[in-house]
Amino acid sequence: MLLLPFMMNVRRLLFIASLLLAGLCAAHAADHRHGPTGTYTDWNWLALPVNDDGKEGFLSFEHTRVIELEPEVAVGYFWSHQVTLKKGETAYLGLQTLGRRPDGSEGKVAIFSIWNALGARGPGLAKKFGGEGEVRQTMMPYDWQVGRRYRLRLFKSGSSRKGTEWSAEVIDEATDEVSHIGTITVSKKWAYLDNGSVMWPKRYKGKEIQDCSDVEHSKVWFETPTANGDRVKPENHRHYTTEPANFPNSRVRDKGNGVRQEMGVPR
Image (cartoon, rainbow, N blue to C red; front, side, top):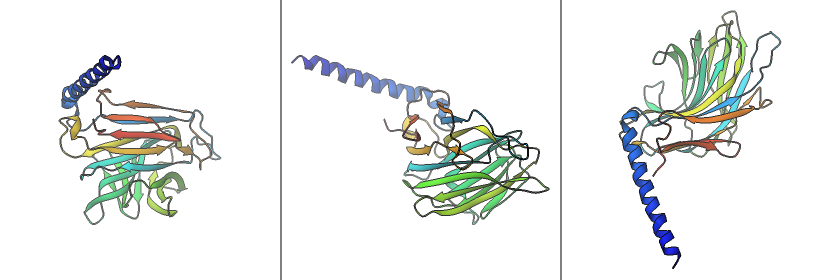
């Protein structure tokens, strides 16, 4: 009998919490008409190697990812690993739900892009992309599957009189099949991969967000990245979200040898 008042208080607290959560969704809906709160994980390597040519930086980054939950409806999600070239610009590579394919259709793709690069080539689309500054982008159809492990790798693949070449590939770990996403040429004045990177998902296409329930649930697991062919691990990492940070249905947390990031977490 002594437990009854306690249980009633627990139920009351849960009910109040649900009202507060609904209030947060409503209060912040206006701030999220173009997307939910973003989740991010920064990775940091404390020291940069100096290569034989005198340039600083790593020659590759690699990691495995698993898209654990894909939205049930057709909506644009992109799961990215973003890096920076020292003395240069930003690059990213990742997997996407609705990308523009060479035949004009939309579907699952793998993407590799670098800002203010000199040229790009690849088996799919290779183009300038001007939506977020001038970007050289390569994009290929890639029928990734939920729950499957994919190894993504960005690496220095060559050099020429024109510049330094960087290539990206995705490996299906179930079959060991390697797919070349593309190669992008950058200025020879740039050094190599800097000592930080960031992983994030982005909901870039879908119905207008008015409430938490409008955000389709997605879940991705990123393995801890490594540099120079798995030989160098990051020294530390941190998670954060975009403002307002307490928008209740996006979250990021450590999970095994990596991190899990979710959007549209059901209430």
